[in-house]
Image (cartoon, rainbow, N blue to C red; front, side, top):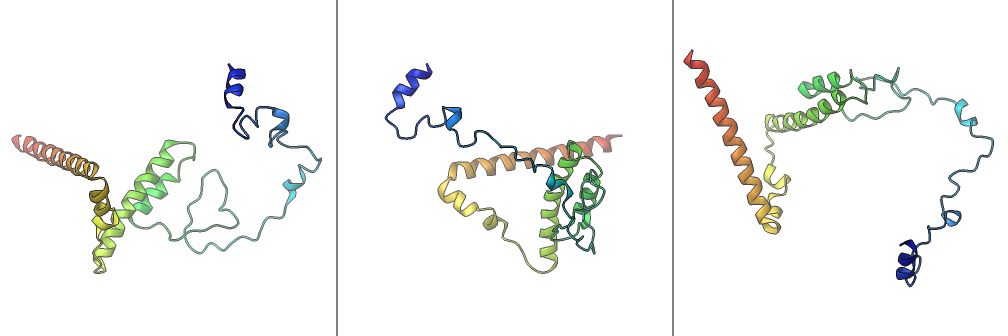
Length: 167
């Protein structure tokens, strides 16, 4: 079958150029030059001063020599981030809280904007005008699903309260 493929596409310039491993650009992957272990005794850069809380993997004893952090963790999202960094990066218990913390941080940012007198235009920021103009059916579907989910949550919460009040 491979020969028939080659025959079918031989008129295309460059087709099958990597079929020969001797002619592939990455072959051999690396030529040993004898100096492969010289990089293990490099001088560590000077430690950047740590003047605010920097979250780092629990698999590392300290923060890396040079790091960047736009803001220290604060609020509920900061608490969730601190919790996440108690776990190894190979565990879901590390990554799921970080994703949740990002969502919580968005809500905290909106609340902070409102507290400072800036009301965010969420519909414009989420691109609803363009969605309505260019993908109306999907916009209608999103609104319908949102309404159904919201209604179901409200119904579930009120039914739960009514059930508690019975006893």
